Length: 301
Image (cartoon, rainbow, N blue to C red; front, side, top):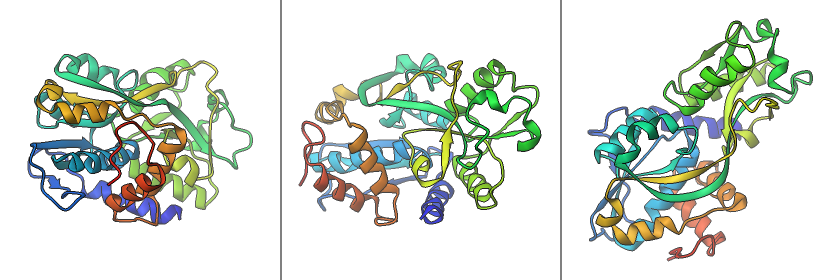
């Protein structure tokens, strides 16, 4: 199951584009009819599956309200925030805007509109395989760089997780002299993690919660006694400035969405899992059938 799910995420990452022009795809109406209230563009990174899952949930609900929805797949948070500020993207459906993406909010916040938080317990983590019995805290990495080839395996260079790890956590624990943070993409990080686990080798990676990989791989979060990875934060729906004035009905629906751990976990599991592989729209419909009362204003049919 791990390899099948990872293959799907790798494919999504390969399909995504850095450009804002020429890479959007019309998701088609969930009820088979085109919308007549305007077109709303959702921007997300497919490899960050919180945004992937909520993007398809919003696509479903907005189309049922009568909007056309375009799905814009990107590979860097910097490009996404720029597009959101410029109005090329209407909604980012899972922004870590309170802490992890604070740098982007300082730069673009006055051009954006916060439509509220849908999940309130997101955290950044440093993780190792469960079989590493003697490594249970970030402090245990000190003096152990040779075991990891001096590398912490990270994700995209523009990710807030990357910044937090490199500029706060590593200096705080004195790891910046012996370790380097290797950045590339979420898919590459997961492929490296898979390979190391298959060979039962030592590896340390940057992760976060909620994220399906925490359950799919035998990994454990390292304790962070210094709090260097930050406190839990909420995940927000961010819109381009003036969105609620242009699309008041859409804004009202989006603002009503709040998911608990069970509802969110079920949504992500269905969208990224094997049962609906290649059919995220079908996954969302299945989730709606299972959670008809997940949030006020949910449109089931």
